[in-house]
Picture 1: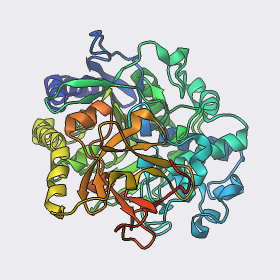
Picture 2: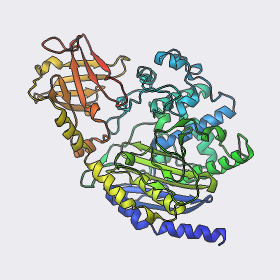
Picture 3: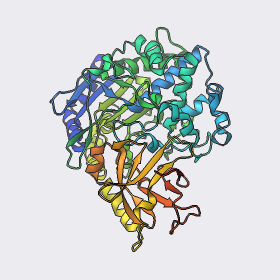
Picture 4: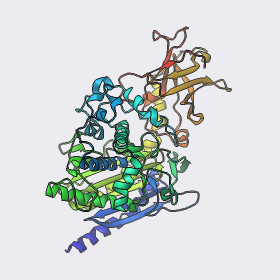
Length: 545
């Protein structure tokens, strides 16, 4: 069989999966999804499902703009590779040499954390996404507050020994890029990557290049129907720009990943740091393993710089939320030759994304969707395509069954949290008068505050950062602890992730000695991150609220 015939055969096998693609989207409750498969450097499949705008009944196409969320991270690593090649910094440059305000922070660790440590998620600092990422359309921490917020987070893993995903680290890298170049991250991307690659529909801004033909954002209700939520406001100008603010389309991403794989093969073959005619530099360092993923496997499961690495056959999907919804992920590529996969996923309120690259065969499979669904079709479908290309048949794994299991779990997450809360509740306790809890409570960095108030309905409410739409009713749980969890549909309509841990829904009030009793409440505690060893304290302001 000639190479053209072989590619045609692969194309036919992928095209035969379209009914499964549609079924998985329906099971997950995904309004719109775009999918591309590249094999031997050639686009063999490109198709689009559902609607980018449900109300207007408008379908997506290759130019439709989606937020790609954490697929941004590989682009940031590529940008750093260019700056290393330009000798503006080294991979092992301590971040405090560029951002001196980090020196001595994080119990001294801030003086030693390097660019590679940040890009490979091995700083050991608590993830703490709940402080900036709650309701759709909001970024709760300003860019000016970012460094102080990060450096006030506790150390919960060993330095350079443990993997712990951390978006704050990429925000720090973005600040370093701006400091070194005197230009924004978005301008650097445009000049050094997007422009040279002809990616005219890719940006970190809501500008003329990305405003038309843009997907709307949705969450999925428990009956599988979509509810529209505000699109993300994260951008080139906000906190976390370098962690996940890129918006793009499949046509542009096909250019990026095709060029990336070609350059990777060239640089590994010739042991060089650059490829003629390509903007990509330093790919040997970018793609080498720097950290071990928390996956038990005899085969490689590691993290490079902005990329996960895995050796087929193996389980995939470490960066998307399907893994949290099924007992075990399927093994991809069984009974086929072992191959290296580099991959990543992304999730922002109302959008998810995933990409899988096999550089040896210049194969890429990636998908973008405009929803936070009951499960993640955006990751199931690329894995199905991978299995079809490399695993001797997609029928060896029942992906629709996996999607049904995951969707059922996803629809039941809120109920499971409420059930566990009720099981752990201490009966027969009463709170103090609700007015005893009223006040403004600040974190130790003074970058995040929670207002507690009794509203006209006589109920207790909390409000994050003074934002009216970040106001949540507190229900008495036991003693001086209140909870704020909601049903699946209420959470979805707010554009909030269902996968938040149970501990994050408890707000506890204490006095100076830790016992509220009848004395004045001094602080509240909120375990906003499950990796924390103890709940952070928010001190009550002395002035009257």
